[in-house]
Amino acid sequence: MKNLSLIALFFVLILGCSAPGKVEAPKTYAEAPDPSADTLTDWSVVKPGLHATIGSIDNRYNKSLIPDLEPKTAWKGFAWRNEIISAQLVLWNNEPAGIVECQFSDFKSADEKTLPAEIAQARFVRYVLTDEFGPGCGYRKPEDFIALTRADALDPLPAFEMEAQSTRPVWLTFDVPADATPGTYTSTLQVMLDGKKHSKFTFNLEVGDRILPEASEWKFHLDLWQNPYAVARVHNVELWSAEHWDLLKPLMKMLADAGQKVITATLNNRPWGGQTEDAFGSMIAWNKQADGSWTYDYTIFDQWVQFMLDLGIDKQISCYSMVPWGNELYYFDVASGEEVKIVAKAGTKEFEEMWTPFLKDFLIHLEQKRWKDIACMSMDERSPAEMTATMKLLAEQAPELGVGFADNHHNYMKFPDQLTDLSIAFGAEIEPKIRKYRKDQGYISTWYVCCSDVFPNVFTFSEPAEAAFIGWYTMAADFDGFLRWAYNSWVKAPLIDSRFRTWPAGDTFIVYPDARSSIRFERLREGIQDAEKIRLLRDEFQNNSSAESQDKLRQLNELLSRCNVTARPADFNELMQDAKETLESLSK
Image 1: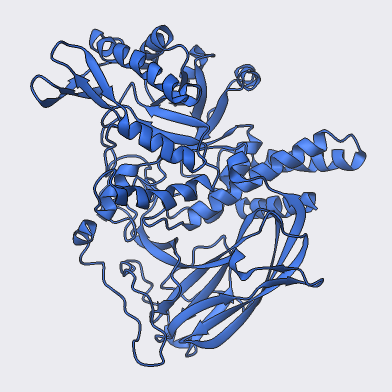
Image 2 (image 1 turned 180 degrees about the vertical axis):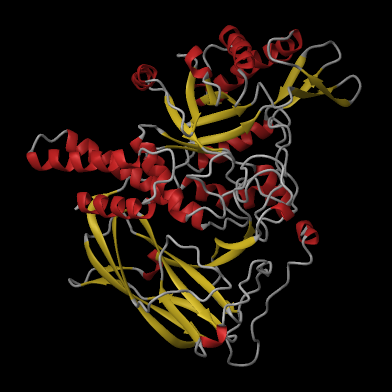
């Protein structure tokens, strides 16, 4: 793989013991050394052998520190049917302990109902280099910021070899079937060490009688922008080859399973000016013929959109961007046989000459594909002047198309009916009258965070509960969903180092190559599930005039009012704990 040569100092094959009768650890990659390892930690106080206990999903346990945890061998959790919930096991040892495996038994209830062991998954948590928030946005030199490792990537290895003087969390998820019979189920997690039984943990899973809809049916409007170009580069495969599509499928299926509603498509090269490691290419080929006419090849656009539709992401196609960063547009000149780059600012003659024939042709193509109703001409943080000129041209040439905009200039006030998908920066507000109008019209209103937001966020150093809080804030502030600009705009070596040249570490991606999830992504999905449960419960309580339902509605509304904050509360951890406990109570 080409990308491996870029990080040859880091990537090493870790081979398990191959002696007869021994368990062999699978090949994997070596993590970067911890640059902030606490040399004062006295690992000699740790008794010989492997240590294991149940920890908290709210903590990222430091690889170089002895975890400050009391022995805990039992866990209990509550879930709706068709919900995924998480737990965390923590392992540590002084001397090399051997090769660890985690084996669940079937989940059984007192009345002899059974859920298969396969509903549980154990993934070893991997450490990645990160930094700190600092000034947020802006170019940064690594030496100017704290460097440390943080637990984040989830590796579905069947076994893992423990390093000396290290801590290794294991992320556990429980995917409750939609047809599970309500009740309490018990399973045993057997930790194996070098093929022999080591320690045992009891997991009690209470399954409620409520059912969470399938992710494709969730009302939460999740919009995480996808970057298929990064996948081709990191895996060193030809763009849009069969190998590329094979790699994209599990990665994008994971996104669909989190409730993603939007397909990120590109109309022209470099819509964001190449700000990421992989500049987005154009999914549409623009060809200017010798007579000055235009033809457009939609082959890749069609393949990408259909690919995502087939995965269940089918509510919107966000097409970027009529107003690219830098105002650069690209086309192939047939007469000269060369690619041409021009600067075409919104409102200029060049801008209209480029976009008018395209919009007319694009509309015809969308109608032929029956995608016009879900297509959205999308733009990102453009100035009021640029937006005004672009909206004018769209109104003249393609009034049937929806328009999406990530707005940090309060442009939305000027376009009450054109902006069918509006996302505002965290902390901003949509005026109540406009918000109500948008709801009445069925328009989408979401919020977003980026490099400028210290809280809540999904940096690799962010508190895990911040990702879950995103769902709660969405409901508390009465938004339809959440937008974040980067699902997988990977840095050079994402499995090793999440830092980037311009923004806090982890800002450019939330999942890892080979469809590896992360603590951040698991907690984000948890918060979205909570948002769906809140919506369903609120609707139920509002439609029931009984004193009990009205009291529950009051409790729910009071809880949400506590979550309608734009800065980290001093009691954030207690708030999230109260939120989860109250939601569980109201669900029963």
